[in-house]
Amino acid sequence: AARQAGLGPVCRNPFQSIVVRALEVQLAVEDALAILAGYRAEGEPAVSVIPRAGVGHGASEAPRGLLYHRYRLNEDGSIAEANIVPPTSQNQATIEEDLRQLVPPRITRSDPELTYNCEHAIRNYDPCISCATHFLKLHLEQV
Image 1 (tube, one colour):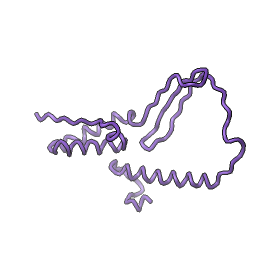
Image 2 (cartoon, helix red, strand yellow; image 1 turned 90 degrees about the horizontal axis):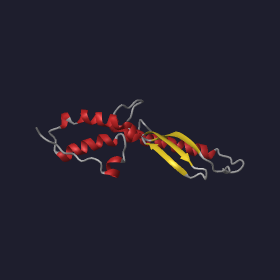
Image 3 (cartoon, rainbow, N blue to C red; image 1 turned 180 degrees about the vertical axis):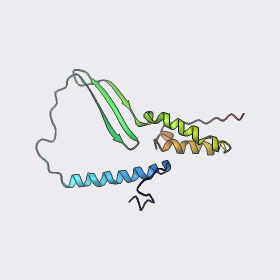
Image 4 (cartoon, rainbow, N blue to C red; image 1 turned 135 degrees about the vertical axis):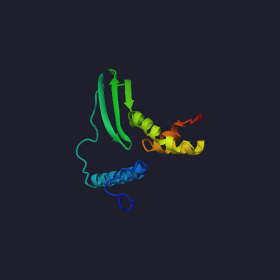
């Protein structure tokens, strides 16, 4: 599939990240179908849980990086505190550095074109951020 998509064994081009993610999703679906094909139900489908106070944390792989989360529960099992650290916030410093590298050679481009270039680079880290949050307001001051 990678060869069919025009990729080699290694891809270091960040602008191909969407293609790479699509291939990862394809692999995950194939793996999930294989697991389901071999699944045999055994025992009860769920475990009974008695609510109690406590703290739990974990990390899970997401298409754009690791998602960390931590929860504190009350005695009745309700969530008293939640802390979620998405990959975008972990990548923020690198995103900003990439923009510092990206802009200077393109500074003579029109504002809409430069905005698009910046958003394109940011979407390599998080494909949803630019549309979901309308986050980038580009204002150039020519000196």
